[in-house]
Structures are given as structure tokens and as C-alpha cells.
Image (cartoon, rainbow, N blue to C red; front, side, top):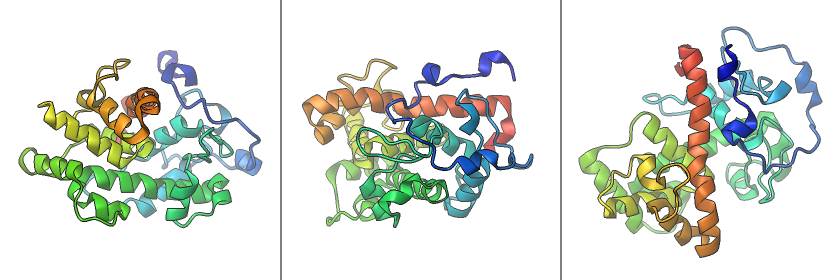
Length: 267
């Protein structure tokens, strides 16, 4: 692989807030390399752990992902793991998220995973897909938002507005839907739907991430900023918006770099 496409953690802004901690699964280091048919090897600059979980990722995505019309590319999910934890199964963030997919305790509990099991790759990787799939559904089915996340109400105004927009303009497609779902994984489905509603009010296409988050580095006073203030409050929201605006871009940059080098990653 050419040197120009080898991307480091710092260049891509991958998650550096998670503590390094001990690696409790040293046996994984001695696993055989994935078979050639898996075709998920990458050279992003994350060290020896980067390709340890390729077979687990491919199997978990195949077993769990339900939308056959828009399959989840395993390398996209691998890109999410790279940004979340730098492939450290023992990573724990200051907010209490843990494991390869940085599951919060409440999220893990909702999907039947014990708090301590978040550090077990064989359990956290599949549950991370379940959590991501839920956010994906929220983005594509805004009318069902309350039901999907278990709200005790039938309608939520901002999700209704997005659903009405879809009824005339269509759902997000291709990379648009992945960016929105990734943002929802990081900041919550309600935050993303709120931002989309504010974009509609501003006569912007809510399916375009740049319309929600602004140009890179210019996230203040955007629909996403307004949504973050709603959800996180004025001070925390003004900090969160920069992390959230950059999050799907980091992941998509990794994903696109792999696809550009080996197009079969898309399958």
C-alpha cells in the first residue's frame, strides 16, 4: 500500500479520549490472521490490534444487520470501531463508555449486555451493531421514532416534520444515510432528528450532513448546534457540536480510504 494512504490516528482525529488501559484479551494477538476471503485488512496506523477483529466484525454484521436493501459494509463498522476505541477492547472514556464500540452502561443494558461484558469483544461487537442499527432505523423511520426507542408517546414534533419531508423528497440514500446514522450513534437519534427539523425550517435539505453541521470547523450557529443546545444545554451543547459534527466525517474518511484502495470492500 502506498505511504500516502497510510493514515495515522492524529491525522484522522480518531478517538483519543478513551484511556489506553491494559489489554485484557492478549490471547487475541496470537489468533491466526483472517482468511483472504474476509478481505477486511487495513493499514490505517492503529498498530497490531487493527486487524485482530476482522473475522468477528464480518460474522457479526452478517448475523445481525437486517436491512438487506442497504447492507452495512463491514469495513464501515470497522471504521466506527477505529474512531471509537482505536481497537482497544479495554478502552474506557471519561463519560463511562467502554469497549471496542464504546457502549454506555444504559445502552448495553437495553440490549441485554452486562456492564462488565462491554470489554468482551465477542459480546460488545455484536451489541454495537444492534445499537447502530437502532440509530439507523431512527434516521430512516422518523415517524416511528417514539416506538423505536420506547418513548411513551405516539408523536414527537421534530420527528414528524422529518417524516413529512421524506414523504415528498424521499429518504436519505447512500453515504447520506450512513453519515446521519453514525451521527446518531454518537449524539443520539433525537439530536440528529432535531437538527434535521431545524434544517427544514431553514429551507435546507436535511439529508445532507454539511447542511446540518456546517463546513468542517464551522459548526456553531448551525441546525446541529441548535439541536445540541436543546439536548445538552447551552454550555455542553456548544462543546458537543464540534465533536458530533466531526464524528461521521472521521469514520467516512477511513471507510472511503479502504474502499478506494480495494473496491470489493463495498460488498
